[in-house]
Length: 383
Image (tube, rainbow, N blue to C red):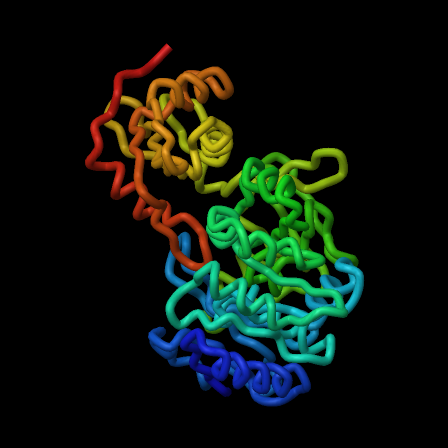
């Protein structure tokens, strides 16, 4: 097995690209790891030809190592390339130890050229993205892949950063839910965004703008509404975790932790099953509360969580980020949630924060948000 350490620099990504090309051709298994991540003791389990091992973000528990055979990685990259209209010059602006970063590298390799790499050693910066985008050159199709947090920062930066975004034929946005207001803002600026849905267990994004890639199967579990995904992009399981593999990969499908529904033939992700808050016997979807909050003037981002409560079992709490210069009025926000979702969904704890705590490549850290809100006072029930 070959471990490739990544410090965010272009030379490290170049080394990973060489290792990935070898692994996908039947060579040694490759495990991309952030420079400061501990190396797991897995060498004995990783047989030659396994393909690629990728750690999950650990947003809902300890990270797991996902086993992605070459055929799965290539199926996802090939189907994604076809959906976007063919090979393109790719800009990598994501950490390469995540599956979305791996997929950018693989798509670029399939197109016959290594990706242009934004140097992330100092973190993601709009000016760095702009400079890297300029190096993709004219005269051919250009694509990139980012997360909603990056999209927001680029739009806020304005000027050259937005011009750089507009210069791409496609800007894939995944890793976390793309807020409808943020999407509308990007589209109004002329940015060709395409929301994606997928996870490490599906070798990356396998549903583009609500439509599964060719060969990918998506359906809802009767009764629960859980999203089930199948097809050639699936991983074979979790390394060294046979029980978890058996529970998650059933009958050729991956049982996601997400709820969904079909709207006009497109899959809409409603939120995670474990983000349903039961308060006073009523079920409230955290994602639904977040959609209402971010739809209000002056709200830049929001994260809703359940907080333990002696009387109600749990109450809704929410952290919100204000747009620059905005003055958030808690009662106005609560009234909007009550009107849209009912009394049970109203955040009893509502706190403005400068930024949401994040983990992975832009996913809200709900444990950290709950911890932050636990010290805030609750308001009486409203309405």
